[in-house]
Length: 101
Image (cartoon, rainbow, N blue to C red):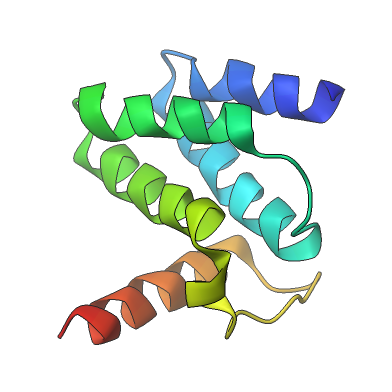
């Protein structure tokens, strides 16, 4: 799928802003298209969680990776096309912290 290939290219970029943007947009894509195949994305995210020096990217990649791997843990996420990306990430972060307390 060409869209996934474009996201992979962005995730493999040396530009942190492009990587973060790709992560945020992939969160939104997963919410709107939950049954899509994200296997290639998951592999790249796993590498980001382990190898990137940017802590924010590591954390965001970790959250998205778990969202893709365990969607049943995120069944509370609403599929809203108009939801701002930063709001979606903030909601994910808060819920993950609540679940780990």
